[in-house]
Image (cartoon, rainbow, N blue to C red; front, side, top):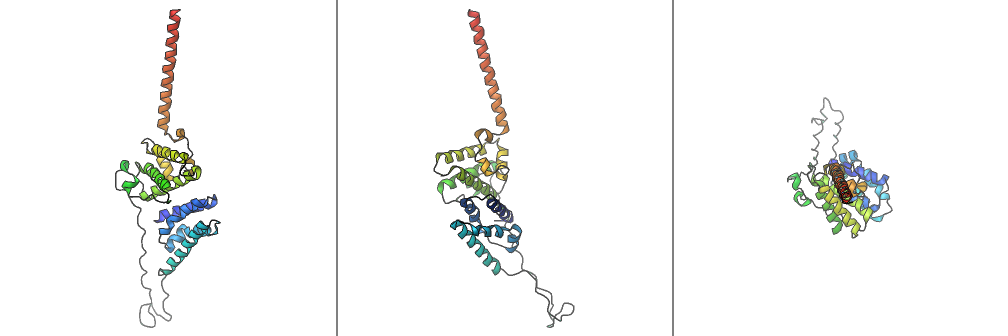
Length: 266
């Protein structure tokens, strides 16, 4: 998990607290943090510890336990790491030399370990899938839900240059919103909706829809409740209107021709 992903996780946790999201949503956001190796700098800059600590007050035992475990683990990890502060020079030193004759300047701090850059996809954008990107969509422990995360991932990554990890995060948020709206995952409504969302995302002309869902411009809760007409691209809507107009004109022409024919026979 890099700095950008950690910042995103902190923002999502903050919003989840503000909106009083259900425990299942909080757990989905907390679980990826179990694999994160904390650094003091990242914890301070992202404020992730603040929002995880708030989860310890949750009435849900699973959320409470996971949040407490994360906070305790991070504290121990940060305390084990050597400090980066420079030692103070010895007393009585002159011109930077202490009483022992050795230089009073501090030794150089150990190099800070850099976060790994985001993973990149290795196939052409139009051929991207979870399988081709080497992505593990098993986030919920439920085969049906994890399969639907894969469906949404395959839709979002189509023709995309975004990193696999970021696309996976977006796909997971969409599935969670759909599960909250249409649960249980065994219901026909949930399955049909996920298939519909996948098909609309995979349409080549739906570039803007893919971008808006990935970026969050279209909120996951909004996306999973959009109608089939709302999911269509502007070009699709224009094409449909054009066909409707053509069909109407053909129907009117047929009626007029029939009327003329009937009149001629009278």
